[in-house]
Image 1 (spheres, rainbow, N blue to C red):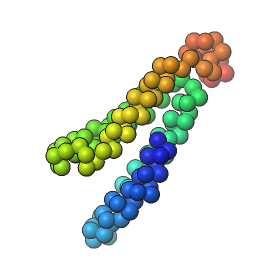
Image 2: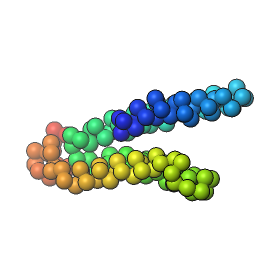
Image 3: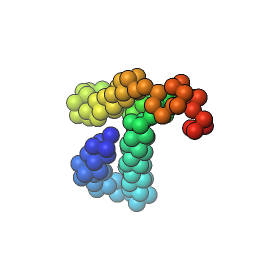
Length: 128
């Protein structure tokens, strides 16, 4: 996910954000373009942090929220690609946004109840 943030900022900025700013001449709409672009950056950074937390503990609720956001992003890229562009190759971001939740699910399924002194989820008094 950290690589996705870097791609978004360093490749997507010049390839997508800058051209959008150039064609949206209305000052207010131009500001909205930037806010929305940077809001996506904030969400991607938050996802990165959440996934880092999941690398150290098993948390099905956090996994569901993080994966739900990514699957939602994937659905937007798939729908936009198919409906607006007629293909899935012009906006391949959906691949990343489906791959990471899959890898997360596999990792969480293989992870023992690490951090739980009782060995059972939800019964660790230190985490209550």
